[in-house]
Amino acid sequence: MKKHLLLLSFLLALISTTHAQSVAQTRCNSLGKGVNLSNWLEGFWEQNWPDTADYKKQFFYDMKAAGIQSLRMPVCFEMVTDTLPPYKVDTNNRVFSIIDTIISWCDELNFNLIIDNHHQWNIVDSTWRTEQPRLAHLWSVLAQRYNHLDPNRYIFEILNEPSNIKNDSLALLYPVIIDTIRQYAPLHTIVASPTSYSNGIGFFKYTPLADTNLIYTFHSYDPFQFTHQGLTFVTPRLPTGVTFPGSGVDWMIQDMWYFALQFRDSFNVPLFLGEFGVGDSADYVSRCHWIDTIGNRITASHLSAFYWDVVGDFKIYHQGVTSQDSVMTCFADGWHLYGDSTLAVQTIAANTLPLSIYPNPASNYFTCVTQSYQPVALQVFDNTGRIIYQTQFSNQTTVNTNTWARGLYVVKLSGVDGVGVGKVIVE
Image 1: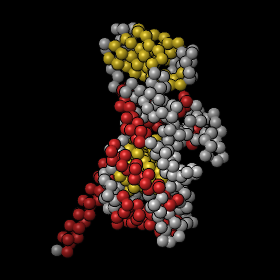
Image 2: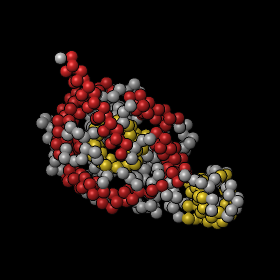
Image 3: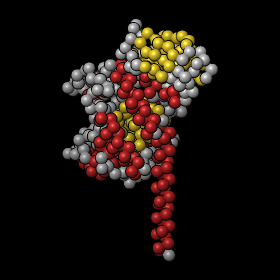
Image 4: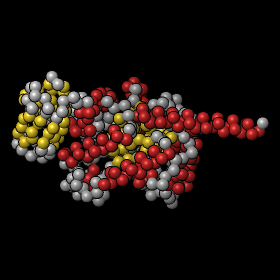
């Protein structure tokens, strides 16, 4: 009888584990396209932190219109948590009222939301044991405060970009925090990441934690010399003029992604891309090449992914306006924004009218060739989605680009045989 009870307990535990894992995977998949609410609630350096005016409700509507399904909310909770026992958390600080407003907007617009504990925690190999009670108490407060939120849409991220701490140390730290959260929010999914600033290399020889209602995350800013060139918050400041491809370390993308995806596939665990982005100090054509490369990897790897900063140093919009008319074409293209319209990669995949463009990149001209001998309409869109050139032709035509600005352009053909869409870079 005792053996039967032990077997039954084992089977029930196995079913529970499998169910939790499938729930976490489902929630991970549902994140889809996301953006970080960056330089706001984690921006402790701001004079008026936290500034209630940094993001308006219109931004949330604009992101919904762009096809964004999820938001990641980085918060510098360290700033409102006492450093001495009993580690009181100042829930009267206006950061919490802002969070409540964000939650209400997410409810209204049906966004998923990751509540991310971001920045400033002195959790390294030499301090993590003494910092553990403070971090655990913070999460006891957060889990109690937000345990009423729908666990299918609201997710907790323990610690952003751990660094200078071994994965062996995190393997001891994380379970304590997870157990604390589970006391008050047993159904919510939790996000964890390895050391090395959550870079892919952190997953080298990394093993999953025991709790199975977890999602793992990694960040992609490689090559760092390219994506962060010229940015003022990087010390020492990296020199500008680095191109992509051609940075000299382009291979880092493949290597870092390999470690993260190998971990996911080896252990069959949920994984998403929590941050990726390229700074606007890089030249526009190189930025377009980079987002095209990363966008293709996201699609091929079936990953949910969150861009870091759509309106700041990593901006993807012109003139600070977060609308389809202002989005940079290659970012809408590479990341399938705005319903996979004329600017989107999936439209290209659905082409029925073959289109060849050469030379590409182009200097003074490019030639379009199609197999249709019926007249076709040619339209060329610039990086704001504006039509800058149009004509009709049969079989092939040459387009003069002498007066065009450097950048990426979308070429669209329309005819009785179907539609063809391609991209050309003018240098």
